[in-house]
Amino acid sequence: MSDEYDNTMLGPSSAHELGEDFTDAKGRRWVAAERIDLPEIDVPETERVRRAPDIDAAFAPDPRAMAREDLARALQPRRLVGNFEYRLDEPDYEIADAIQAMASPSNTEGSWGESSAFARAKYLTGPGLAPTADRYVIGADDRRRIDSPQFFPGSAFAYLSQGCTATMIGPSTALCAAHCFFQNGTWIPTRSVTFGANTVAPTAPFGSFVFDSITLPGQWNSNEWDWDFAVLEFSPSRPDIGRQTGWFGTGQNFNGTKTMIGYPSDKPVPSSWIKSGAFTAAPGSRYQHNLDIIPGDSGAGTYDNGDSRVNGIQSTQWFSTNPPRVWNEVRRWDSTTYNFFHAYGNWPRG
Image (cartoon, rainbow, N blue to C red; front, side):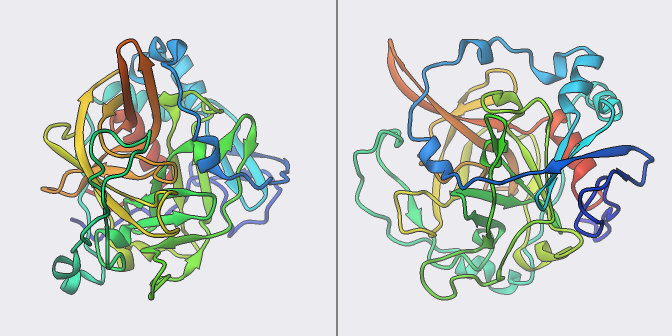
């Protein structure tokens, strides 16, 4: 892992006066929309209705297979800074070209953070609760509570006040699901972000704060699941939070057992729970899987224990009646997410 990382933001941040058009380091213009009134929305509540298979989404083209013009327009980002939304003035052709030229993304490396001396010893989970009958649990409930989430890898997962989970992937960058921040044309406020959150002391080992900006692909609104990803950036206010919490690498290893840590809403809130399973199918840019996902886990990254690389972002759950089946889906890590996050986040080089 390289200690060098890019720290030039490609969009407006809290360092700039809100509500004014902005020209970034590459000379691109961001247009400021009017001030947004952020309503209180409980995201887990919006996720409690199971979804039948989405035919339109199932046949939507994988972003990587889209025409250049269509891809650039779909990627054209919207960014929330404080209470103002900014939109890139032009379609994002640069990222579209990078995506279409990339066969597969390079792996990125993670970091255990400042707690690394104790991390491996403290990465122990509790005994777990007895299995419960829950429509979101697939098979037996094998979730286990993390006793010491202030140590990596639990420290790299954050509880978001609206009821979601975020995962650190760089010194100041985290990933999450877009539906945690924007649904049906409305932004959702985040009052606090707490890494390693717990209901017992230390409840907020790194403090509670908010991100500097959120960046979403413009194509996302409420059910465009191929575009259900969001870049959370903590620069310039907390540019090195990842060096305290540690962060995950990223990669495309889709074989073997997958692991996820999240903040499920059916457990004491906020408490982090670990669960394991496997990807079972690959519909385009998404992967079906059988991990036990509960509302509140949305936005958490799936990763492989062997290399601690995130390979999916928890997105949604589906069901069918013929045959009867329930499954979960992550937005897979690929050249689309890789290039979008590298453009609008702050990552180590190499």
